Amino acid sequence: MANILLLEDSSLVGFGGGQKMSLLVASILSKKHNLFFIDFTKDSTYLQKLKSDFPNAKVCYLKSIRGINQRIGMTALWRCFFNSLFNLYYLQRMIRENHIECLYATTRLTSIYCFFLHLILKVPFVYHAHLVQRRDIKSSWLWDWITHSASAVLCVSKRVMDSMSKGNKLLVYNPNLNYRGYKGEKKNTKWTVAFVGSLIEIKGVVYLIEAAKELPDVVFLIYGEGPLEADLKRLAPANVIFKGFCNDVITQLYNYVDIVVVPTIIEEALSLTAVDAKSIGLPVIVTNIGGQSEIVREGIDGIKVSVKSPFAIVKAIKDITSSYDRYNEMAYKSYESSKMFDLTEFKKIITKTFENY
Image 1 (spheres, rainbow, N blue to C red):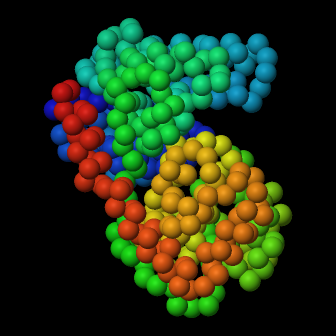
Image 2: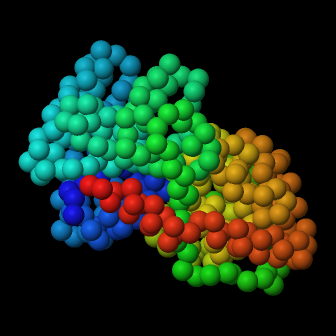
């Protein structure tokens, strides 16, 4: 039994796919290890769920350095610098006092801290990579150094793995957590399309809403919350319904939805929403970039569309809903393909990765 420190940053996205996986990893590790938790905020949905799942968990908080992303100037730079130094000092002390034997990082920011702690204290760390590593930025050498220094880099898709040039890389797809099973064949006449995720620019929700304007007979459900919510509501036609944050997305998709759209405009690692949709047998429409495009077979269990293209989304929806036979065949193929996201295999990899600590 080891003492493991899990570092999360839920200050930007309160409860996305990465945070869901953090809780799942924590539940797996808690069976054999003592866990300690770090975050950069004291108020997020992730933290609420963490405290609910682990009532006796020791959770500590670091100073935010997000300000540098929004403001330019020496004041912001110095604040970021001193907050970073304070955080590093605080983490060193916490690791020593609690005899931490391994670190688990879930974001790029937390992986940087783990990297420096590894250099200073020689404590090993595991990086769970939920983002595609860009090779066209000046700091790519730093990420190469970080991934090379990690004991293991858990990559949530082949695209993430291919973007990492160095390190002990392991492919670990986000698992299927569906407890409902196959939804069954479509029988009613009304079509419902859904988006699930944070209402932020990179998710591309605005392009789905533009598509909704061309399909007035289709209902569009938006599950999620975020800074763009008010603007999106002003833009949305009458057939778009905002449902807010949902604790049980699987049940909502199972009961009310026929198609899920993932219109992200950047290379994301892997859409957990797409995995959830496939697990109950829903065809998925995804943009043809990032990890989500590798889990959709074109025209078989979903459709890949161009980025920032409402027209392409409209065309894809019309294709899938052209007939019940067409829809039901794609739906079942989608369900069959969800077997690649095996929870048992995920648990084995996580357990084995930390078994030597």
